[in-house]
Length: 613
Ligand code: AGP
View 1 (tube, rainbow, N blue to C red):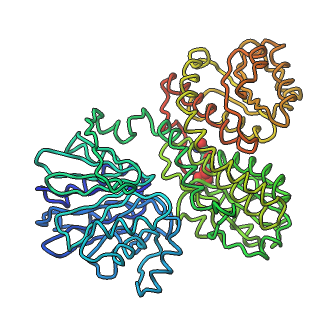
View 2 (view 1 turned 90 degrees about the horizontal axis):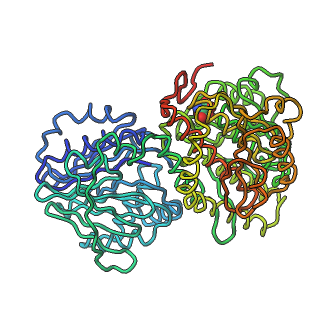
View 3 (view 1 turned 135 degrees about the vertical axis):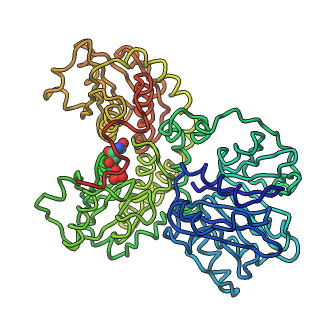
């Protein structure tokens, strides 16, 4: 989720681009760059780290007599966050530059093809491939060359292109990654990956759609379909957000925005990692050889907090589908335990930030004991990823809210890919089953996207009855037990209500003593392998006047007889229930905390990354 800004018009371009990039700062970034055309010369500045590092090296360029350019802040997905990998990227001549947001899935094969044709690459990014691909097709017609190049791409991309040979034109391409144009009477034409960058200059915007190309000039723009080649008439919309609202794309909080970004986060994490024809799982960044996989006796999953809940879900998947014994440990315990670890124990750290002190300490110990270390992480180049033998990156984009939401469901997606990868290598599942499970994973983001607005409405209708509770129990069985834990953590960390997650079967071993008419219980009861047992647990609660919110399967009318409130969820593959059933739990926590006036994005006492013990 990078920041993209472009401009052509009467204003000096450098200040416009820098201001735009500043307003996309919430999107997070690890490097930044700017390019503009001064006379016939492309001038490019890039730096790693925060935007201020780029501003520090630009100095007199601020007043450069230049009126067309592009800017970019990077959230690394392919290639470490270095100056060399910062955008914009150039072709061999240096006269054509591109900036990009998204993932070009087939960049490896394109890169090899272009290298064989003599192109020389400077970075490890997927983006640079596009610059050389356009160069390969470029004769005198930039538009035609860009069309041919884009037709070769697979994956998601929002792209800006500038060529010294066409000094009055910017080209923008959108496919599965947001791009919006800013239009004005006589102040030029703007391009951005998100609305906040445009607001200082215009509130008149045009949202590009997938497989569209826009040609921007100082006095206006044209949009064409890359599918039909025909011009597309676009509606100009007026934005009535203020800057603060715009940073959250109109949502009230980053957490709410990130809950609704989960379909994209899951899609981006899965994208390019399942071969659509064969169903083969492709995770090259793990650097696991066939021998490494066959050599695995046991897997240790190590994490903290929400990431530990993801590890608990993964245990069920790995043992069921890959037939590998799995131990799960909270990192702060793992690091001080007497560990029975050797080179046959694959140790997997799960961490959104890649900087959590306990988890980092844990993998260092395991590494010293001979274990191979894999990290499931959302931040490219973070400490954990640099100290691991391999990684599986989630592509959730920067998560600003302290309470983890999209990073969690992206971790689940990555862990399911990891499971299928091992199951395929160890042939513990058939090719057909693997294909089916891969399709289930690919499809779950569509289900989440479709259901989110309805679940939000149904949760909002419940909040009045539950927001002032002092305690809450969350229960689930099997794959949904970790989701009960996660729901309890979400509620307690942002609303400050005491909440506990329990395995449903554990109620009778003590917690049922808490049940009375004042104790609300959220029970996860999908029609899965342990459904009947879960129903029995709910009936035990009902018999003691407990207040129940049931999350169950569409059409299960029996549930209405044993609950006070219910939210129905569509039937999906049981393996996908942890991803789907997380949504109502997240939204309940969010709506209750909001109703209680809590600081949802920055809860008291919490930090986004716990880099100390
Ligand atoms: C998430 O909602 C919590 N804020 C917290 O438990 C978090 O999951 C934990 O600190 C681990 O962080 P990490 O994933 O960055 O390692």
